[in-house]
Length: 162
Image (cartoon, rainbow, N blue to C red; front, side):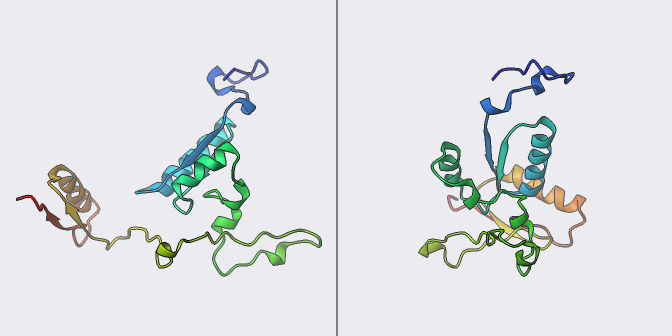
């Protein structure tokens, strides 16, 4: 990476020349939406070419994308217009004559994933903690108390080795 001599930013480390760096991010898990939004804000603030993908893109798809072995237009980034449209909305109304309209990304599922869907956690989600993870459980219960959750998020703890 080199610092661009034309950049007048007070922090010279934010003056990288864009063609020399590529950042590819795939994030999922708790609070992934907020994390992806913060990464997008950072990408916009630094003008670095950051490609950001959420849990709808399989983690192993990122490497072929970064190496140029797969077409990035086949995988929507987390904040792409196609990705954020409601399911029943169509884009054909906004298309002008001669413009090619790309259908929303629906993904390709293997046979063993045919009945799989992503379900985010909600206010009533509960779980069972596997193993002796007392500190994690206590943190979850403390968080539940601070949020005034009506029912604890930990339904039980199982430790099969006792």
